[in-house]
Every structure is written in structure tokens, then in C-alpha cells.
Image (cartoon, rainbow, N blue to C red; front, side):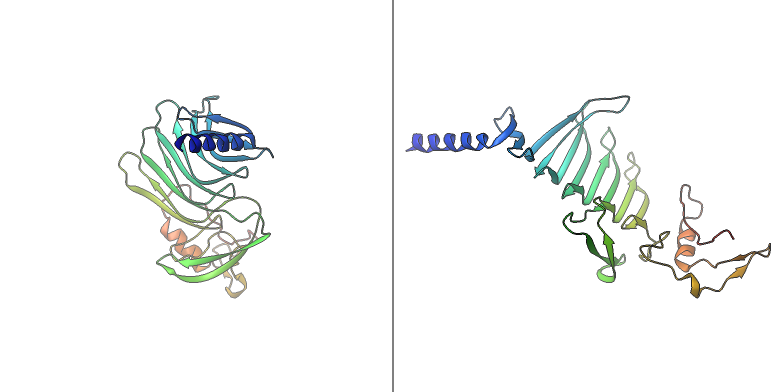
Length: 236
């Protein structure tokens, strides 16, 4: 009986291989890097990227579904096998939390992404209060441009000390203030400049008063380098 069962499993396995255009076998006999009859990548994959023009090489492993990366993908340095990245994918795009490490293994940053369903022309995104994640404060309709967008909390670390050195919050690629207001993008969350009374500077030029969201953001980042914001002035 055992021999019949084993024979049946072997036949089933061979039939499965026959439906694949190509594949490789691991040292343990597992089928990897499968390409089906339609030429689509399926199942577990391992990709190797060699050192090139000063860029360090790496090996990545994860899962494909209909030629698109899905789930957790991990990257390891070729030179020492240290994990240098752990990314999450959906529909072949970055989605959810991703972590990046130095070649010594220290955590460098955590990113948060959102993938949009490629089958939908538009998508609706709910926005939540950063201080109360259960409280929905707004909804935004976005056009699907076929790529992932920064969405959520980004954290930068000192990879040696392991302490947080900077934190950012994004809504669909746009930087926000601590209270969830979008900064520096009029398309996602328009700022009604017409309700602000123009003022006059020392040279007698009229300037538009800055919205409170931008003032709060500038106050928070005062003294920091590489922080760019749009202040709403037209230069006229």
C-alpha cells in the first residue's frame, strides 16, 4: 500500500512539473523559480543580483503570484549573508511595513507603503487620527497610477544605538503634521487661501498668510536640515 501511495505521489509530482515552462530544484528537492506555461512567475523564488559598478550585490527570496511579488520578501547581502531588507508586497507593489538594515545588521529605517489595486481606476483611502488610530477623520479618493505610495509612519534609526532619530507621517506620498493634516500638497487636501486675509511685508508687498498646518509644521522642524515645505506664497 505504501509503495502504491508513493508511486501515485511521484506521478502527481511529475504531472505538476509538466505544467511548468521552467523551474529549478533546491538542494532539498523543492521546486523554485517556477515559470508556468503562460510565462508567468509562480510560487517561491530566489533572485541573485551580483555586485555591479560599486553597488553591493544581494540575494532576495519571496513568493510570486501571476508574475507579481506578494507577501514578505527578504534581501540578504552576498558578502556575509546578513539580512538587509524585509519588504511586504501586494499586487506586485510595496504595501504595508518594510524594514531596511545596514550591512552590519543594524536597523536603519522602517517604511510604510500602500499599494492600489491595479484593477481599479480610482481608490478610496480612509485617514485616521494619529493620536487615535480608531478615529476616522477623512476620506480621500485617489487615481490609480500603477505604483505604491508612501502612506503611514516612517521611522529613521541610529543603526548603532538603535534609537529613533526622526519620524515622519505620510498620506499618499504627502508629508503630514502630527495632527494628520497634509502639508505641501494642494491636490490631496486643498488649502483655502481665499479665507485668509492678505498681509503686507516690510517692503510693502502683499503676501498670503500661512495656514496653521504649515506654521505648525515649520515650528516642529525648526533647526532641522533638509526639510522642504511650500509656504503658499506666489512671489508676486
